[in-house]
Length: 344
Image (cartoon, rainbow, N blue to C red; front, side, top):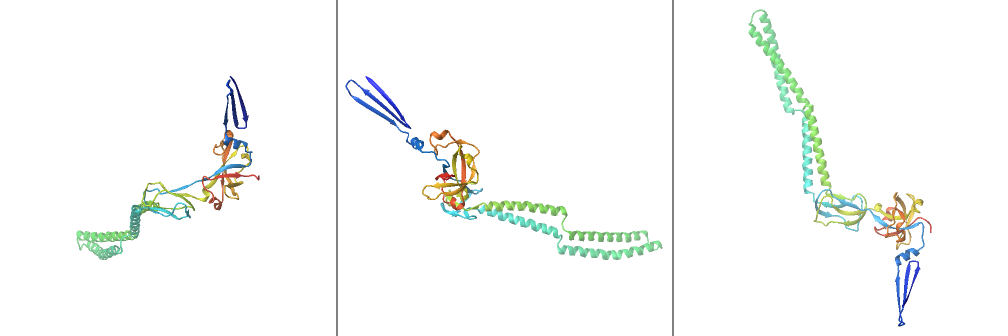
């Protein structure tokens, strides 16, 4: 028995031919062909500088409420465009509204109390103190001359010392009564003490803080769009319970749409942030104009989904490209693109 094997290597083609000859003159030919078609296609393709593959990336904005509640209104639909300040959804807010109204009433009550403390006593109370003061002055007007008269009589030994002491006590009592009522009248006009007023002001500030918290809680039951964008998805339906912090609407603003590509390290030095590039999309005749917004400072290995098996061991740098809003809305996350920065 005689055997012979021939191994032929042509690019990525591997052809093995085995010929076996027996004494019965029976010839069996076995041909095994192993084809690495994807590698051949990529390996045979010419290397083009200034052009790489990439994909569209979207940075989504997840709109959620920090409070839990039942979804009572979903104001947008998936696939629609939302404008800035547009209402997106509303949660049930009965409890939060009641707490806000209660806090408002407590604040108003505290403010009224402070105003009353600053006013002092009521006009009728001031009138009462004024009348008592006039009576005391009238009594003093009588007791002072009486004291003087009794002093003269005592000097002339026409009255007893006891009667004189009684007249002097009545005069002193009337004087003290006048002084007391004058002080009360001045105090009544001044209002409450400074420490009482300061305490009332502190109470108002604390209640106002509680009111602000209650108002914030009530406002968080409705969420609006901070910026215009595509309603990429809605994650709940009306009537469903939404846990605190769970997104209800997913937005994709145009400025959050970008292209990511990977540039070989042999060409990265030619690129700079702010440099204009062209992005070609399948099915669109004219490329889109964009600008490089980010160049990764760290090298990484070539993603195998973009580059061939042979180039996996080469280092590349990721770049990000942004567009004007009117261009960005024409791109879709996950869409493959070609990025070029040189005239071919």
